[in-house]
Picture 1 (cartoon, rainbow, N blue to C red):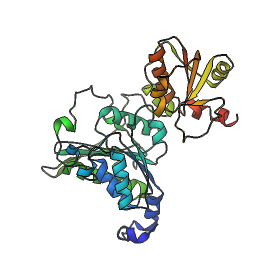
Picture 2 (cartoon, rainbow, N blue to C red; picture 1 turned 45 degrees about the vertical axis):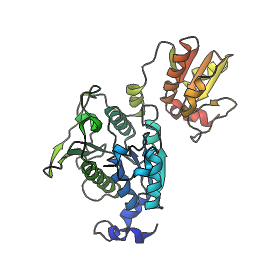
Picture 3 (cartoon, helix red, strand yellow; picture 1 turned 180 degrees about the horizontal axis):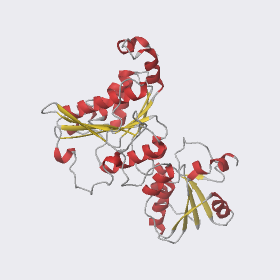
Picture 4 (spheres, rainbow, N blue to C red; picture 1 turned 180 degrees about the vertical axis):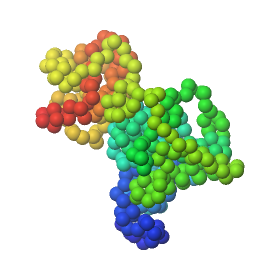
Length: 365
């Protein structure tokens, strides 16, 4: 680590080399490389965060450029994560950048978020917000949340204990997701580009505070900012009993698993083994190729979810199909894809809890 780069913050009273070392070891996931994500990414990289993950499925559009300041006219049509990763490496080559050109959804959220120490939610839709929140709550990961609309913005920190040992999450503030179209987004309501710049930069400040232990993060507090008046007000968030608590990955899976038909069955590892002994059975591992533990390819055929829809167009001759993944979420999504194709003419199974639940079995094979 080149400390000369960070000298102006290292000499701050209460910061020093120890805080800088904590930043260099931190792994932060930024979901959404838009108006909020762009300033956060720039300042986190400049501050020396060791590893930054960027998740966004979108491409740069010309209407983004008034607020998404990592991008320029030449980037229109390119994947945001590709452009953002290149800009960050130019800004600070010390930073390791992971990028995911996908949406964070109920099938991949646990797997991706589990790799990081803290998550910043800079998304602009409620479905993503609830999935990200519920994943962070189940995995006990601090979550910095931000939102903007028009001339106003909001910022909060969830899943982080305050001085009383209490922590809250997004559902304590908004227990039930709004109906589709009930609340307009930025594309419908508009936003002044400066507002996400201010809120995204403030979010980077909260992340740095949490990582280094300096200051007082916005745990259980939400700040509302109005650019037109430069006024802020703060509300305190208290735990609510109006929703199912996400105390574990199993709770997340139960709440977010797809609604499946009677032709789909969840099974445990003993039932999976019994099925394997039957004729005409195919066991498919739908994890990505980089994931561990690696399984015996003579027993488990690997078809990653990123390739699964293409695979599903081919003919599967086996009568019984068993799908497995890390946590038992993606395998449910794969089961639904196959059920839509075969309409009950094949027996489709998913390993409940996935490899994570039955890890000792798979390691001892």
